[in-house]
Amino acid sequence: MVPKFLFSASFVLFFLLHCPPALAQSPAAAPAPPGPINVTKVLEKGGQFSVFIRLLKATQEDVTLNGQLNNTNNAITIFAPSDSAFSSLKSGTLNSLSDQEKAELVQFHIIPQFLSSSLFQTVSNPLTTQAGSGGRLELNVTTTGNSVNITTGLTNTSVSGTIYTDNQLAVYQVDKVLLPLDIFTPKPPTPAPAPEKPKKRSKAAASPESPADTSGAVSFTVLNNVVFFGVCMVAAIYSL
Image (cartoon, rainbow, N blue to C red; front, side, top):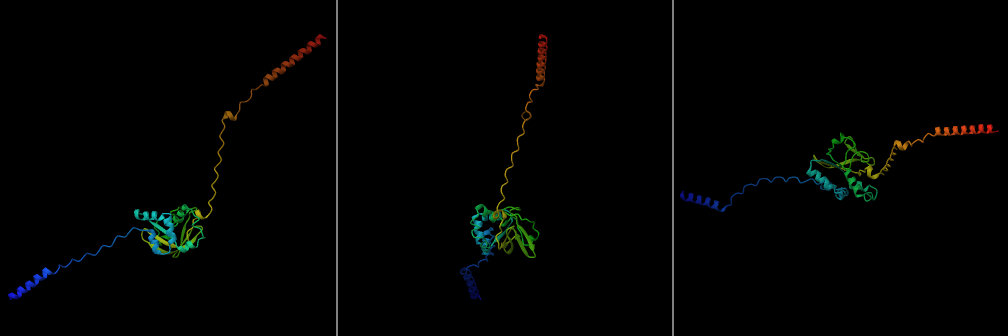
């Protein structure tokens, strides 16, 4: 029995000395935190918005949007025209715009609030865009069943798909560029300045001093002449 015990003990000792300890199981890796929202990356995944992405970058509106989404609690809705929407514009349309007009055109496609598909049914018109609201920047949204229609006075189109949506950013595809009246129609002429009101003249200037009344002096002179003539006549008669 003793040799067997010694053999067993030796085997156990050999095993402990020469076998590596079992590795503890590593905990499951925590999921990486989501990265910051990047509007152009969202559009790139859509695959057909290269012109709109180029406009966003050229006007630096992408920087503004990413800053609003990642550094504030601001919510954004974007109506993104597809490349085919830009292709349907008259040739040279974009090149004819100034830098300021290009920025306004991009801003006209951005709504500074989050609009889910259900909110389109209750939203108030006209919508406020990053470019402004009402008048020559009017943009209206109406719904018919599941269809969302958009009108600007020059453009009549509808939402054709959802590119991205969460609780802060919604990106919808539109198949026409939303053209604001402020850019693509002649601006009304600037009204002429109102004429200046004539200055009021002072009473002294308005009422010149009345000439002195000389009627009394004239009457007295005439009377003297009459008397003198009468005296002369009487003297002439007596001298005869």
